[in-house]
Length: 283
Image (cartoon, rainbow, N blue to C red; front, side, top):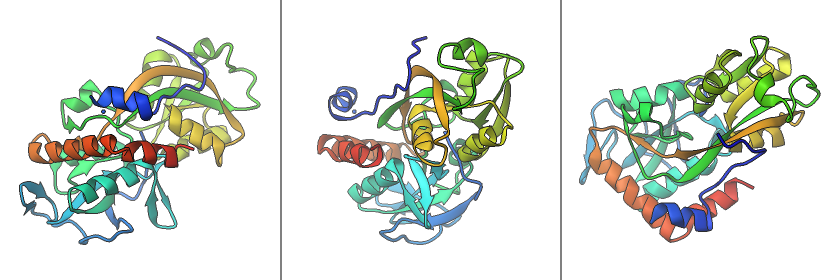
């Protein structure tokens, strides 16, 4: 394991070009929201054929997301904002489709894509893992992230110098997002600690503030974003270069949609759009 401090690697510029040759979340389960550019309305129960693509609603690409994971997805004054939200719109635009988002708790997104009927694809800071690959297909990755743990800044028991050992204690409670790779990472590397899961990642940070948990574990880019905003009295004490690849989840029964999304990602990478979106959202 390679452990460093405050380390995350966006797929920008050279890193993105090299990979391309190119966790989470809200409680408003299964409600729909339109992209600012407009939408065709709520998805119907029966898939609609859109040319060669099978979509829930003809002319609309519907993504399941859990919008409490800035800088990737968030709801601000009713508008979906963040890297993933902008990427989803760009992909839909490339494919000549409208873009719509439906809110699902993070740990319910992959099961929803498997079951069908709620969204065409999942776009919500979803890392590719073997367990998820057993259930859904993934697009080409568009971002690489790592793991980080934050504690209250006045916590003298858990510091950067002793974090690896101090966090792995039966007296420590680590807040995580349910079903996330942060939860997996905490379980693997701090098995003696108690885990406190939340469907909404912001609640995990709030739990540390309230003294319900000693630490919060999640993807580095999101942890850093949270600390730069409402949770500035917390700080990172541990980072691990896990190199997680974010990608879009698509039903194994919809290979044509997967191919179309991959074509769009490749084109958006080649013309510099993805780099621009990363720069605009990760500042």
